[in-house]
Every structure is written in C-alpha cells, then in structure tokens.
Image (tube, rainbow, N blue to C red):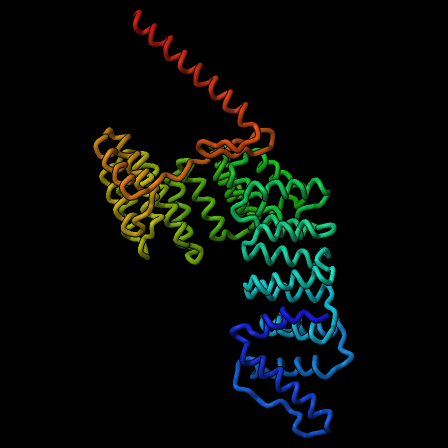
Length: 468
C-alpha cells in the first residue's frame, strides 16, 4: 500500500527535507549501480544530521535492498530507533515501509504512534490514524490505545473520544488513558471511570489518581469517598504515593473539617509506611492545613520540608503558604514571607494576599497587592473584583464606585460564577443565568417559589417590627 501524501508530508518536514530527499536520490542511484555491477554503489556521505547516522543509513539500505523484508523485521527496526528516542528516524522509516509495500500491523502502529506523540506533531499522528483506518486496524485495542494516548497528550479531546468509540473491546488501559487525558473535563473523567467499573474492568494504580483528582476538582465528595473505598477494595491498604497524593488532595479540597483532618492523617500513615512525600503530597497537605485553619501546623510541615526535602519545594508551595497566612489574617508574617522569597513573586502570590485582604477587609494592603497584580497583568479582572469587594466590606462605597467605573471604561466584564451540586452521585454544574440544564423549568419554578417565600417572610417580619 502506498500513501504518497503521507510519504511526502514526512519527506518535506523542515528537519528532514534536504537530508532525506538527497538520501532517497542517492539510494535510487545505488540501486541502479548495483544492477549494473558498478563498484560505485556505496552511498555518498552527505553533511546532514540525518545522514551522519550510520545505523539510520544501514536501516534505509535494508528497506531498499531486502526484497523479502517482512512486517516483523521492519517493525523491529523501527522499534530500535523509537526505543532510543530517535523518533524522527522511526517515523521516516515507517514511511519507507509503506513505499516498499510492507503492510504494517498493530505493533507497527503502536510503535510509530508513540514516536509521533513524543515528537508532539499532531499532523503526523492524524496521518497515522488515517493510515490505520484505511488498513482497518484503527479498531484494534493496541492501536486505539496508542491513538488515545497521542490525542490526550496533545490535548485533542474530541479526537481522543472518537478513537475510543472506534476501539473494539477497550480494556483498562484504554479507559485509563482517556480518563487521564480529560484535562479540564472533570465530569467526563468521572463518568468514564464509572462506565469502566460498570463494564467489569478492574482499575489499576494509574486509573485511580486521575479519577480521584477529577472528583476533587468538581467537589464530588460522595463519589470521591466511593472511589477511595474502591481503591482499597482493588488495591488493598498499601496504596502507592500517586493514589495517596490524589486522596490527600481530594480530602483537602472538597471535604469537611473532619475530611481535611483525614487528609493529614492519611499523610502521616503514608510516612509511617515508608512512603516518601513528593511535591504533590506536600501541596495537598498544605492545602488541607490552609482550609482547616491549621496555620501553625501548616507552617511546621513547610519548614520541615524545607530542611529535609528542599528539592520538592516549588513556587506553588510558597504561594500556598502566603494564602495560609493571609486567610488567617497574619498579614505581617505574609508580607515578611513574600520579602524573603528566593525568587520574584508572581501574580499568584499577590492574588493570595489580596484574597486574604478581601476576607479581613484589609483595604490598604489590598490596594498594594492589587497594584502589584495590575503591574504584572493590567487586564486581570479578578483583581478589580476582589479589591472592590474589600472596599465594599469596609463600607468605602466611593472607592467601590471608582473601581467599577474604571472597569466599565476599560471594557472589563466579570467572569460568570460557576457552582455545582452533587445529587445521587451525579454532579450538576451551573453558571450565572444558566438556561442549559435539562430541568431548567423546574429549577426556576422552585427558585421563584423560594424568592416569594423570602419576600413574604421579610414582609411579615416588617409588620411584627412595626407593631412592636
């Protein structure tokens, strides 16, 4: 089978265009010389990265000269280059395989799709997908899973979904790959995990972290607890650091005070079992302390990590500490902490400080934080909103009016608020003024009833107060 358009796409890529075209020409000459019995059959060296690779030239000669080269041998040659991270050569050799009329199998596609994933080249991956479809191998679970991984890592979720739907009898790896690729699509990830369980597939150590993280991102407490129980059932009590991190993050983000204490207890159990914390573990732990009001305990964990595991500390850990101190109203400590940072604070640090100022109506420090934010990003709407809220809480209505007028003059609009509720293990998401929910009529009817009831209560309270 010859896919000339695919072959041309690869040959004319920027990194290979000159080298590979010269190589093809020289090999055509060599083939002709061999027929004539000429001693000039050796390929002439070309000063390019592609041709300076002797193994690569040898591989190309094998494809040109061995008339009985089969798919197993060709796939093995391509695999050797892929395993050595020489992915461009692997993809190029695949195109030579097609030109030589060697029909690829599922293992060939699995290898070369992985190479295109490593290269991050969406067009090559799509051409490989089309090639697999033409041959009829796109439904093979091995090929389908490789395509899922490719589209997921290159953030092409719709294509990943189509590849999944085309796959015959998807296995746990197929489901896990699609679940982990659902970046920013948390509801879909949760639903896929449930679908996998209903299909009778047993999740593995890679499946649970992605699913539990998705429940944390949508605050689906009931589902997350169910996934935790499921992890213990299938994996036993000795959960690895990745599952442990996702559980700490889950309970820290969306649990009650008791659940956040569970996150801290879980961390302590991980330590006792010999599991070394990494940057994700520490971030979840600090988050739990932050939202439980455990300022001193959070400070202690941070400083212990600074002494014992300094390599795991990243800017987000420092930002979490600023948030921890600001939320608790310890503004002097927060300012000193920012001054002592080993790097220049980014916009997230000043937002954490501004958020604390909004909570505690610290308008003066809030003004400073807002100026820092707008200096880094003049179009940041949230800073104007938080500063306006801080002035509003302090009763400085004139400043509120000035800020809102400035937002209007700059054409800034508030990002619509988003909220969600979990009912019977199903998460319902709403945005401000939402009219897209399938039960919108019933929802707005109940809302109107609640508003009328509140008005009646206010009116009755007014009469009671007037009579007294």
